[in-house]
Amino acid sequence: MRMPEPYRIKMVEPIRLLAREERERKLNEAGLNVFSLKAEDVFIDLLTDSGTNAMSDNQWAGLMLGDESYAGCKNFYHLQDTAQGIFGYKYIVPTHQGRGAENLLFSILVKPGQYVLGNVHFDTTEAHITLKGGKPVNLVIDEAYDTSTYHPFKGNIDLQKLENFIKEHGTDSIAFMLITVTCNTVGGQPVSMENIKQVSEICRRYGIRVFIDAARFAENAYFIKTREEGYQDKSIPEIVREMFSYADGFTFSAKKDALVNIGGMIGIKDDEELYMRLRELVIVYEGFPTYGGLAGRDLEAMSRGLREVLSFDYLQSRISQVQYLGQLLSEAGIPIQTPVGGHAVFVDAGKMLPHLPWDSFPGVALTAELYLEGGVRAVEIGSLLMGRQAPTELVRLTIPRRVYTDNHMAYVAECLSNINKRRDQVRGVKITYEPPVLRHFLARFEWA
Ligand code: F0G
Image (cartoon, rainbow, N blue to C red; front, side, top):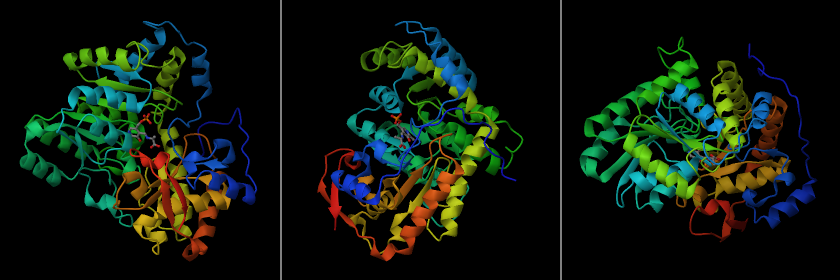
């Protein structure tokens, strides 16, 4: 039996579905790019799971205990204690969100011309590596790009590719390894404990430091517990501890698995010198090291959210809701990344709309159609986002944590199923405006 949510609803936020003609007008005004829609014109918003979480009564209560002192606020110490306990790391540096953490750490560790290895780097991560003169390298296993084949850990790094890369380019040319858990770009796919451990062993052998992009660390731990041999009887906190024991530090977007709306941090296991340099930089870019660009109340909400996210019952209901949407779509014959990942269902728009070549952006066309069909907002993860021909043209239906019910999921599935029935008629799009970096946010289109 599928267990229901281990919480009940205390407060609701009304949402509304605009009439079809209104949706058409709004989408045209937005240049067919759903990023440019006003959120109030969206009925069900599956753009991202980032910062869109519903906080608990305990977290809201924590906001009232915000200590807004410039230096040394008590909420920082709560966060530090919590994070040290969870990850087993000595040093914690708060930042305003994940990319703030990336900016600081990469400023110190990336020298121009160096490679930063990973499974698949997230787009802001890639941008920060590139801005520091570094070169992002993705070494995920090939199965990650084959949406129809089952693999329990599609976020794994290909160990052979890793060794080959190190041997070919030499350790001096490599800044560090960054393992993203779960691996967002290929579908929120988990990385196995065995893989984290082996990657860490290989890197250690060559003197390369290992970091974790920890945005969805608890969801990754859930997959290890439920899919990996030997972890069924381990608790989520035990699994998290072990995952982080193989790394030297992490960057973290708290907007995902700290169940908050804003926040981030860097964790450093024991490298005091690196920590001291981060403390100097955080002051310049984010704020004093005990607030990192956040209010005291935000730090408190993060601290409480980090404790809540470790609940197995919570993780089970969270991930089984994502799987429920995936199951409805599969039953409707819609091609999706299988197995379904932790935070989203990724529709394979390339397979669903095979008549559309990559440069007529099947993913963008499908997100536009989905908004027209039912006021649902999704996001393209394909050639638009990559800035070049992508290996897969995906549309991400990202589920905010604790926000929508299964009825919302059933509605989304029905909208997509309606589009699927007339998929031959879905037109491609062409770009009418494109900014030079991170073009997907601001690009404009017209129907081809
Ligand atoms: N790393 C990963 C794996 C992410 O998914 C994100 C953000 C970041 C880093 C950056 O964190 O947004 O707090 O600055 N992902 C969001 C998304 C934006 O929609 O997937 P941030």
